[in-house]
Length: 434
Image (cartoon, rainbow, N blue to C red; front, side, top):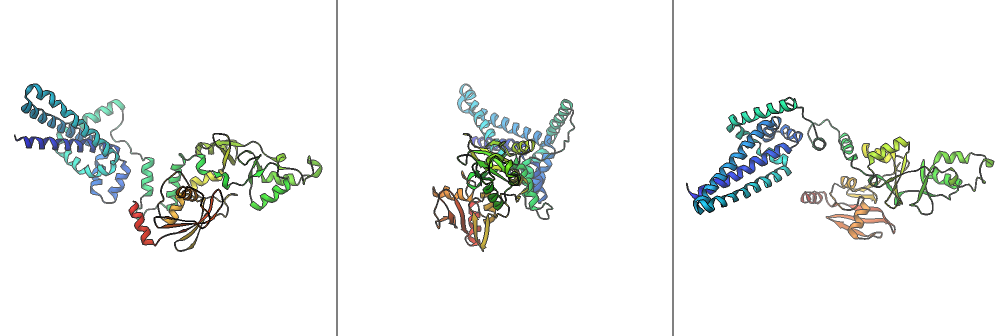
């Protein structure tokens, strides 16, 4: 046999080893619901992959046979080749080196195919099905032994009901299928339920910069006038600095104090402060506390507001039960957000946006992707780009999108005018980013 033919066969065997070994891990790692989705879209390869995944003992038997045949053939030919070149003394030792590329091919192939599991499973499905026909007698024996062993050792039947993973359901809900009976709002709600388990308090809190609070020395009369104007039911109270939250003032407690008789108060009504009616039992939670755990704590303690603190014990914001509810069902108008809209479309392609608007919400409005970074709001994005708090009328350009600062103070960006490029240019930018 020609040396070139032997080398060619060895290379082919290594390729087959990669296909069989990688195909096995791709089919095992694939989400069957994603494969089923592509099969329903008319993909013949996806249908082949689905049939293989529904009978895993068949494709595993096939890939085991194919992988082992490829390895045995390549090592046998390589050993004979080395023996003919280097003789029986050195050839046998050198032939051991064939183990290295064999292992590398298997490791690299399995790593790559697992990373692109669904794609590779669909592409290799027909090849593995064809191989299962070729290896049918041996594959049948291995599959039968495998099923029998599993049934005897575990007592399970061969056909187990399939289940759907969180990622699989997200994929199905996110897919834009024609004639889908799943409403957009329902898809968004299910997605928020899944994400809710990972959200922490610092992601949903109202930060200090956007929070309204009263000093503990505020007179009851002044507090009532202030709270009535803001239409708040609960308001944090601080002592000294705003990050030192010491209690929560309830609007109904304030009304009750105003209706008390003068002789029932420790001092004249005009001089009484909110300290005398303050609820000092406050629920303090760390920034890293999971929202689902916080919700349980608030329900157990019957609290509607919690103060979020940092590692030094200073308040960094507040979380209300409405804030937590919004993470699941969407926007809820409470006393802190009623009537507030974070953006306004003032002309085609022009938006006046609050600096506190979240990046994800902004991306949906302007139909463009902004870069990820250590920020969560529009104001944070612009300050990150500039490295400072920009003054009014400063202009920032990002991939054709113009941001003009309309209102800002020394600490934060209040309002931004966003001017989008022509729709065709914007679509081209989005496609290039993808």
